[in-house]
Length: 375
View 1: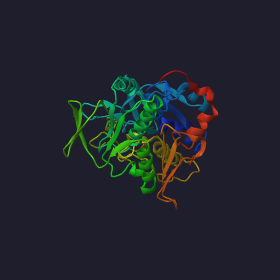
View 2: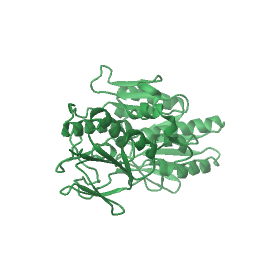
View 3: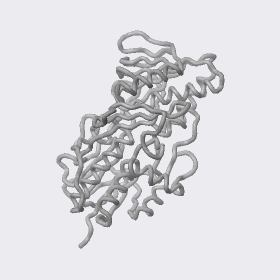
View 4: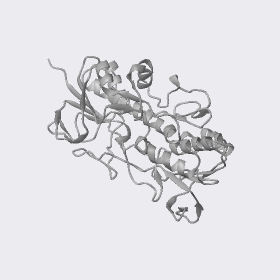
């Protein structure tokens, strides 16, 4: 009897985490194909350090990973899903049939604050680095880092500010740095205790934070606020609003994100699951994508008859904040006796930027999979 054909679409953290989970929960159960749009798994959260003058984000060879895990790798970007025929179509017109489909396509950068330099990850590193270098030409650079209200995951904007502060301070340069955010408190998603410590550290670094503030745009050398007023700036860097991939053939919300249940199942699409930033859940973050991939993998394994109990997605939010000195580890868990935690000591294993339960130890144990150079 032939094994069911499982197609995992995506080349990021969620996709590879799901493949690893399926290898544990349902070994030798599937004829598994990984459809990836590029040759490398890029740890995109590390690009913040690169944008401010640090080393490039780590990249890993997807072809070597596929060989190591015993899966077929197909290059290409998914364009559409034919649910009735259980078939996907890639952007170059290739058709791939499946019995079960797991999508982990990620999100794409959407609108950004008018007049600001966009930072949405790896693709924006050169522009941000160049903008910071130009700003250094001012006698006392005035730089604002902005997260608008539609940005759920704001941690990169604080990292940009802190790493920029370290960059200027190491060079003995004076500067005026500001974070502008619609949040009620800095990184409030991690809870009150963690937020207070972050606010204190920002104050020590002489970074001004304007919370509960909606930025409207950059014009005439000033950052303007929606409720009135403005500040003079030499540079404004802003996080873009995320948008979903808007996959043809699947349900999506007004922003192109796919709605899923707590097991990752896509409503109205039998044998189709989705995980990570492409789903309609508001927080787009690598560690959460890995947890969603785990829930989906368990559900798929049970669907195929494996002896595994599906477990719903119950997120624990973990974030490693780069500060320019030592990293700060943040955690928010609704089920913990200490729901909000901030620590200078690691709160999870391997000191990884992305807290992915299987992927982090897998990559750590296989340094030969790492690619050199820039992403």
